[in-house]
Length: 553
Image 1: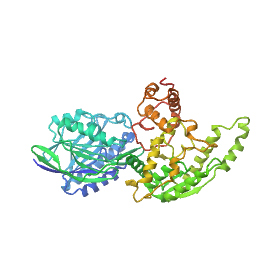
Image 2 (image 1 turned 60 degrees about the vertical axis):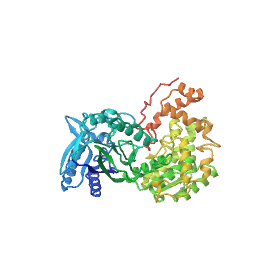
Image 3 (image 1 turned 120 degrees about the vertical axis):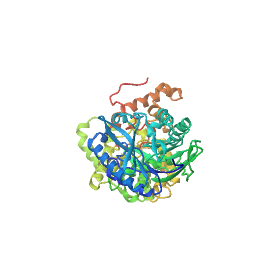
Image 4 (image 1 turned 180 degrees about the vertical axis):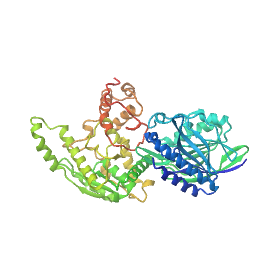
């Protein structure tokens, strides 16, 4: 029996599907953890998380077995044992597991029991639930290993406690959401620690994976609910935690605390990390975007520069006869503040060509939304042409408020490969712009400018698509201070019109917004992926039928 233990927590990124690269990275981190008894990696670190249907390919499972054996053999050198997340097949089904690799062999395997099947998660589609797990006996210490969702309910940890567990170690693949730090530590980890009286090490990964961003923020909570270790958010980190047994109770000794981002810094860094990893992992040389002089494109450009650096961001102004001088001036000012390439490609020649081409078919019909959408689609074609010719990914710039009510043009401003504002309501966009003009995001250091990234007028002028004379968003929508709370109630909270009316909103307005939300579903199905920020993003979280006759009034 030992009374001291050194456990290394490897808060690291991943490459979904690149098993050899993941295994090599784990071995590199193990070499850096010299002096540790055990090194722990995040959930499914060997194959990447979430694997989605990739995990259903037998070839991937075969590779996972091979790489796990290779990792196990490396532990014959007497260095740290490894607690590795992977997948195993047994009795014709798959299990999400952690394996203890020690002294050259796989010495224990424990399967995840609670499989999340909500929001972004669909693990019941992929995995079978494991039995209630027994603790792993390691150097005479009984370590309980509840995997991610296993700590969101009391059953697994209660069973581990009843089986004599001394320490709980929870490998996670927990995506970022606003205010999730508090839920993890207080509502989840704190509750399990109070129930069991056991210390808990919570390990999460970092990095972007399509729509999801993993923020790290791993921690160790002692049995008295004190935080002994707090790892940083957004950054990889390796921490060797020191454990001692005092009066029969294992305690993690205090380490360096890392403060976590508050809002809106956390949202901004989530956007930066999500875009950076999406572009880099998919090997794009950079991004191209339309810079209109408006607030959405200005924020998108700022995030892109903070993520990739100005040399990899290409901003294009595409003016029409409806583009104001203020927009022209503001767009070039944004590009200069950010230090990006900036080009102007007027769309009037194409607009004129379309007017001529469609004149016979449109004869006798007044100009309407059709001509506005043509302008947007011309811009989309222009930007996609630059993307095709030079290889830059087209970054779309629409926000969640617009996507909710369908105020976006399919095959126009919706064209592109990724969106950093997809899950950001317009009021959040305003908050982020004000914050970024006054602050340097931690992930932007060395990439973006330390000072303001857009003129103040971009934030203060009334939002407009500038597709007709004197157009303003509020011509046909409620003010965003009214619209966004209604949308939040309809989307995130699934409230009815009547419930929102009880909150003080006008029934006619809410009824119209609900209708617009439902009829725009077909557009959202064809939109590019974007960073998940809240609890119900348009994509993995919220899956509504396109053909849908339901209304709550």
